[in-house]
Length: 171
View 1: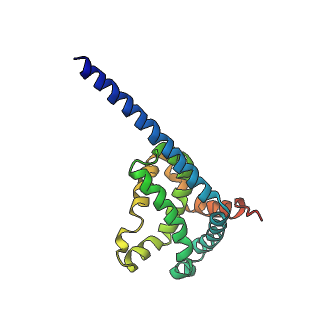
View 2: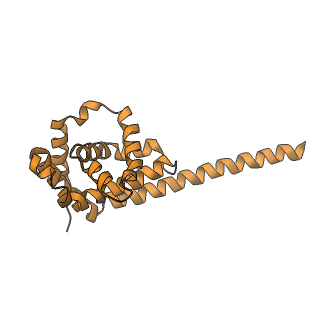
View 3: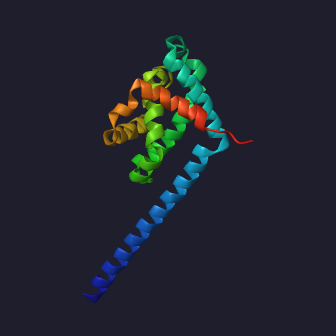
């Protein structure tokens, strides 16, 4: 009887230690992701992409030239796919990811989808139908929590302008 109680006690301690270690790992991953997202190379990519997306939202002709923006778009979507995969698998806490990335993810995903880049990639790449599925899943989960008015066209243009203006690239 005593050994059973001791075993249960040890298992409970191990469980709580495991949860603590997992939370610490999640925090470390988020710090690394934040460094990547706000690092100079990604900030420059985001600034340039925001400028191009802004133009594409205004000018329908630019929308048709998918290949010119594809590499820039994929850099951003690949980052969000990584965050989404880790979140969907439970490696990152949804609430933390929501607080840190929901604003940017909602706007980037909405603009890129509206400009038909997602469907372009999914239809024109080998195994493309599987591209950015984790990102889409996280987007849908986040959008349930947020105000859908934020993704109206005038707000999409404002977001692009904010990204262009707010991402000061330090020398």
